[in-house]
Every structure is written in C-alpha cells, then in structure tokens.
Length: 317
Ligand code: PMV
Image (cartoon, rainbow, N blue to C red; front, side, top):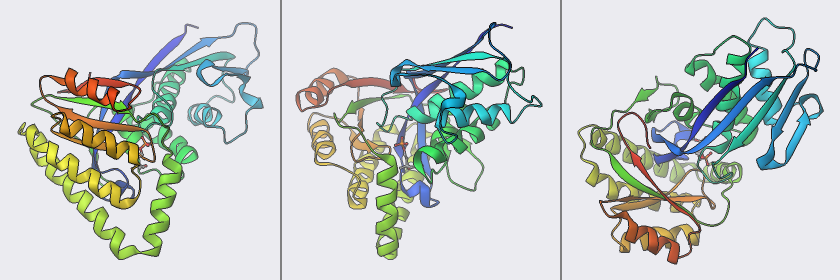
C-alpha cells in the first residue's frame, strides 16, 4: 500500500467576514504561499485500526485513540473512515505539517483538515470529491469555531476564489485582472471563536444596529464582486477601507491592526483591512506595482512578517 500526500492552501477573506455568519455574502481567495500538508503512510507492524498522528508544529505525536473524541484531528479522521465501508482503517501514520500561521485569520484549521481528509481518503481508496471534502472540513470547523459560516472550508477545499453566501450555491469568481495583496501579521494571534461570540452577544443586545452593519458589509461584498470580474480592481481599495471601518464598528479590530491599515494607506496602498476573525491576526493591503516600499513601512510600523501574494485567475500564488 503506497503513501499518499495532499496539500491545502491558506486563504484570505477579501470582503465580508463576520457578516457572512449572518447570511451576507463574502469573498475569499486561496493563498498558495501558505500550505498545510498531510502524508498518510502504511504502518506495516501495526494492527488494523491503529492510527498514529504526528503533528510536530503543535508538538503532537500520539495514538489517535488517546486523543479526546472531539479533538479536531481525531474527528477529521473519523469523518473519512465513517464515509467508507471499512470497519476500521488499515494501520497507518499521518504526518501533518503546515506553513500557515495558526490563529491568524489565514485558514490554518480548515487547511489542515482539508489536507488530512484528502490524503486519508485517497489512502483508503475512496478519493472524496472537493464537495465532500469541504463538507467534512466544515464539520471540523464547528469544533474550532462554534458557528462557522462555511467560507473557509469552501475556498480551501476548492482552491479557487469564491463568492460565498450561506444557503446559496457556491460561486467561483473569475479574476480577469490579477492584483497584488500584502498580508501583514499584526504580531498578536487572532481569536476567531472569541470574536464570533462577541459579535453574536452584541447583535443579541442591539439587533437593529448590528443588522445594519452586517447588511452594509454585505453590500460592500456585492459591489466588490461586480468590480472583480470586469477587472476594475483599482476601485476595490476604497471598498476595503470601508469594510475595515465596518469591522471596527463590529468591535473586532485592534489598535495595532488600525495602525497598520493607516500606515499602509499613507504609504500608497490602494486599500487595507483586517482579514479573518480579527482581535489580532492579519491585515491585508491592496498594492500597486511597487509593493516593496509599503512592505518595508509595514515592517517598520510593527508588523513582524509581510508576505506578497497575487490574486489571480485560477488561484492566488
Ligand atoms: O479567522 P478565520 O480565518 O477563521 O475567518 C473567520 C471568518 C468569520 O467570518 C469571522 C467566521 C466565519 O465562520 O465565517
């Protein structure tokens, strides 16, 4: 029985996070410079059902059975095994590595689930479709985030830019005019679960006010979709700035993210916003042909890593 390897990209949300949980549309793109990887190899000396998990990035090396039943990695394995006719999986070792910063709004958890599910399903001789993988990864996102919208598992499992709205068919975006985005770490981890819970609490306390913000974020995402396909990408910048202001109003930005966003704009970025759950994590800034100067300023102003990515036709580089 051969080994099977699968990778999955990171992602950024260009428009619409948080409001997407409440049924508004959002736009996300995969980011291939960040990758999660899973390798599933047979363990000749093991007995059927023995599964060993190695995830050195989180210092985990364990027999799957010793993990809590709601541990995300154990749950991801079960999503695949339960989908086969097997009583138990052949003895195997699953190695997980990732270059996607954790707790940072870059889709680390969904990418790890996706890579694991894809590699294990191939190992078990039942290659799942992207749709099936996305659905299984969504179930694991529930363990991580409580009430995920489904955007992370969709953009990562399909590895294409998506226009995502709960309850409507997933739409893949064609990006005719590629554009550059700087992804800057704010230096402190984000906390999606906490941010989503805080927004929910605020919404329950003041539904009218928050519904208005959600619908304005949704309107920004709709406008962005209209601009992306004809390639009028320069006009996306102001929409990003507006989206950031609305995320500030939701209470999920931080002084550091605000500072970096302003520094990027002052340095010539076309627009900037936090991306993902917030309360830390990453800022994204849309830049023109000469991103180096803006990257240097973000580093000077306190970002501890800045990565350039191109949002392009099939997927982001
Ligand atoms: O922080 P991330 O990368 O998991 O993104 C979360 C996006 C939210 O809209 C805040 C939550 C969701 O499930 O869509």
